[in-house]
Image (cartoon, rainbow over the protein chains, first blue to last red):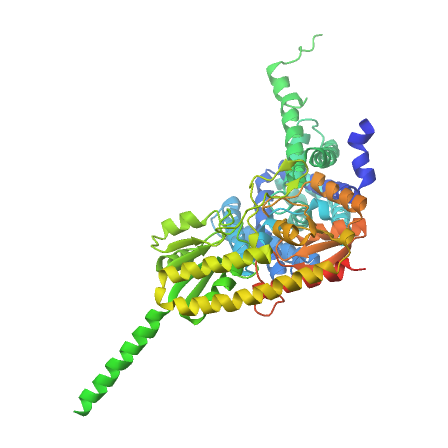
Length: 289
Length: 298
């Protein structure tokens, strides 16, 4: 019974196993990046960047059709361009970073929709906005695992400056000049993870498996290492449960995964031991001597 | 004297231009296949505009202002009906068009949309009636009558064109039946991504099974994909077909997982462009049958 509900779908169908590997890779790469984004109060930046990827992916699509390499390359180029461009305007003019980013990503989004429409068929846009976690081929899986590997390696190497920049950027600036390159490397990591998520979940939902687990983890840990571990766990759990829900209830897989992550988040908001609702409303007893 | 001659000549010329411009009846067809019928019946007497062009999908089409302009100028608008173009009534009204609206499927017995995994698709009837050549002949007579109603002077031309075209369709129908008959009956089963061949199945006995419902805007769930894969394995379905307007990656995955053969492209909702294999309705049907035969005969 339990076997039928939980194991059999993956044992019987290869596409389910592939989807599972795909969300594992997305979780391992995306969730840690999400935690850093959250700690740096850049949660919405991820969403803006996910939309900024669209014109690049659309250009790739226009040139080569639903081709993995062209769309990946286009997405990364567009994402990095927007990240660097918005950063440059924020430093060179009086506009703040969030406003310049908003301007960039709105233009990108409109440009992307226009480019896809140029090809004449309007259904293709839906394939780009909603990815296909159920149709991951070998090349896409290699790409996703590659992105996860690179992400974990880069995070390991630049761990100290990254954490420092989250908690005390001024101190980091006073002791080291690593701040700018680390910031740029981090933005690049965010872009490649979003591009990976875009292949599996589409541009609209790519950011979901990055931010929701990170926000979830905030309620369970104060330590950043533990927070990342919990975020990865929450993302993997959402992936498994989401796929099973899609399998048993017949709802589209991508949205099912993100909705599951949303449920996990909601439960954490209420029950989380670190600043969760229950903790606030029903405080524990004070320690007494 | 000389000047007067020139002026007279100019006047005659202007009159001739005006007359030839007037002769063309402005006609709008909602999508490419219907446009092909109108082109064949109307010939040179009509100036035809097609709203959803080759390779476009009429289900999820969003009209542009230039479409409204075309409608406002048109004398007659041909629609498929059977809820294929949910947007057309509002568009005709919004464009302030006084065009006669002719439903080309009038007189066709609609069939139920294919059932899938227990629950019926919401749309009820299947709009893709042109997939049976017998129905295409009804389209043609409706187009003919619609054109005669707005342009009685062209009656003789329209009737002759329609007669010629109907004869071609008769030949096409015989050809399709003969080709399908050469496929072994137990192998007449394929999977295709867009469930648009209900009328083809009813007319020629080839079964089409789709991973998605009747409308292309629904995203397939893991349950749908699993059901299709099980079905291919259980019924030993020999071939999977990619279509011109749905996600090819999903079908590739299903084919990889079942070992079914991947057929070529079947055209269902839209013609291909001029250079493609399905530039006209007759080419489209021939192409589809050829692809089916190639994938299903062992």
